Image 1 (cartoon, rainbow, N blue to C red):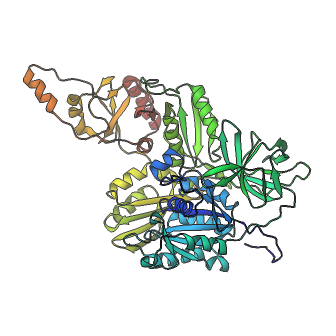
Image 2: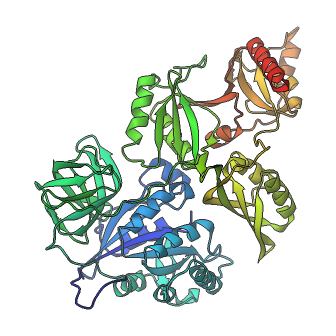
Image 3: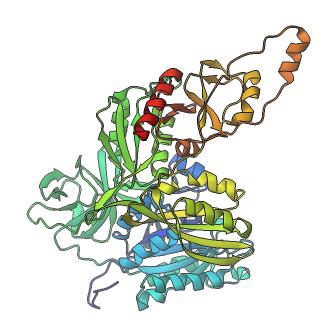
Length: 621
């Protein structure tokens, strides 16, 4: 760390580190193993796999969405660990966490090597002059190339402008899933212990400065909320002390101040928050008592108002309309269906999600919700449907900005790893989406890595096409790059039409058989449909109105038996993300606790025909 003299008083009893990595490189598994082996959780504590992923969706998807705080005790010293999101949509939290710590564990897969999000988080850490430790994980994985990966990491450090001290990073080799680590890259040297990692943390990561005798400065970097104590500000005590019952001032983002009384202070131990009476410089804590405290605000003494520099919060780049469900099936499957309930839930999300924006529209029962990307917004929708909500979603749209007088749109850096035989198809498809190829290199084993700069709106809906194109073997990652001038005379989107039901009722095998040669069905027999509901993707460039509810007129018992034995092709099951990606501007996605349906905004077939005709005429004019 810069700017410390040898006379600076330090908190040798504590270390603050963040653990950062690309999605699925084993970061959370490593933290779990550190918890187990430090005895922090006690002999009888049953730790689950991915214990730090406390959100149900995180556990299912195997990704970290929200930053988690934990702490382990090792050799009488406390190591605070902040587990951070590894997906680009949640990069804003990564940046704020860098302000709370003195060092980072960079976890890199021994086979995959450095990836786009590894680059993103490492850049944030180096900019804050944090001390790095590199953990090469999954060293036992087939095809692991630990020494090559260390060289890749070093090249990345140099490319990102690391200083000399940061380039001299220690390396630990580990297999977190097996609970082993060592200083040696040879897998045979692995031992069932995390001591090499713990000892390296204590030796390498700087202890916090102990200036607890100076006036308080505590900055909120993360938010939490519960119904008992209200909003909770999580952050670091940068200076001074804070006690329960203290009357303090919060320096608001708009420059105003507000006094409040500290009602609760929590420290961290293992996976739990533990109530403490006092905290001092260097501690990571959670504080309650201020109902509208916000990220970046500084808590200080009433008689010594001094704000810390503001924390930057990533601006949303994608927006979509959330609407009250008004389909013919509205209210059938959900318990939270009113506009008031939906708005309350969206507003509640703002308590903890600082990268989200919710705006009222001039349409009743409709809100414009903006976020960092498709994953960010789809996870909110998934949470709401699990809570019993019904709602409808419009097609996602990028958010345009005026940059130096030029209308601009968000661009992303796209990194693609694909088997060699699909390279031509990938380059062609990215070119159609206005992707500009920056680099192409062979990574061995019949694999090629391609790097593009592409407009975000061209990537909406691309992941499904990409997986299909590469037979499921391609890996694509993208992270926000910058705003660039809008690409003109280009309108991305689905090129095919939809198969749209013209009546209501349960679908029948007989009807579906007559429809399936017109495109790819999304439903099987016995599914309730309504007029205007999308039941499949057309194999033409326009919508096709279809009947899927008609039964066969049976003339005798034998015919009935034949109809029963008839079969249709397996329909394509559409996930929530795939359904959102599928949408065109005249369509909506209906989401309930039990179903995800696609529909036209105008349900009536005749009204839709009139509207389409008028739109075509206006375009010609």
